[in-house]
Image 1 (cartoon, rainbow, N blue to C red):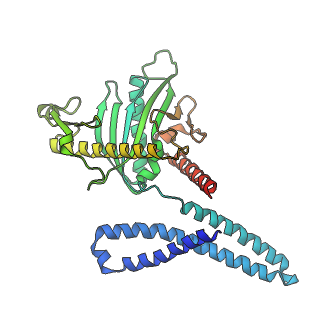
Image 2: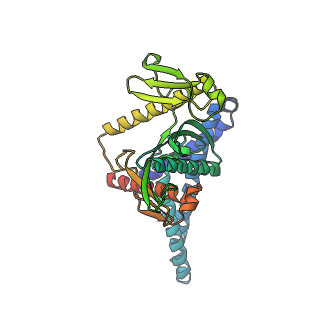
Image 3: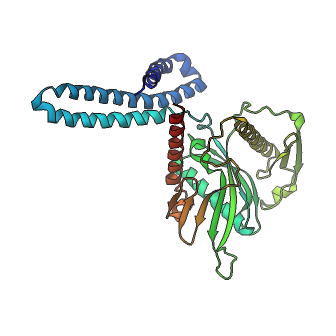
Length: 360
């Protein structure tokens, strides 16, 4: 292990001792925000320190085995022990390298997830509904909370556009690679001759903006319109002007929300989506200005780019970014996304390690 890496790890070990002291103090116990932050830091540091201690034990075992090689009667045993220690040392060092990779500061945030029907007309809208169910089922399996923020239903079912909020530990870290074009190949219910059609939807996954102002929004730059809700919802929905449309004049971003009977709650939801979209826009513009244009797993960042194909006749899912093919499409559509998301995360880590090696 390089001395610089070891020094960094030992500084984290010292920081864990400091965090333990802070957690036991009365001040931390009284401040819930501080307690939550320290607990999160403790969990991250504990994982690193645990692997560091295992690595140190492997180094000690290797040194002990090397010392035993001086005794001819112990040499065979020592060589075997040394081989095991060297392998364990290498495995732990690789694990520590992954743990030290730069963390996305948004990883622990909640998610605003938007699904929009694209090419394919009614079939695309139906597929948008299928994708919504897939993400809702996945969130349910994780024990996360979900909330419908906005929807625009199509006439034959499904959605022209639907926006949901997903709240849970590490939601963004797991779902952030889902942004992009999702293509479906199947025989639509409306197809009389049994021909396979290709349709598409776009998915946008954005880290939710903080309540206390990740994004500063000038009220003078907003146009807020209220109107009667349309579509399903019963007689009460259409009798009052509960629907809200907010237009951010400088950017032209428009957010509508009409799913609640309360105009106030619709306005709050719309403002949350607007703040998240503005924050996402700011981050993408900042990334675009950076000098380094290293290839990322989500391609160019253009959300119309095809990232995945769902082939129903063959029961096949293909993620084109990492050449992953799975023949268990029915289970994936029922929310079993772990294999896909884990593979994407692993590939992203490998790319980060390669970039780090190039720098070093």
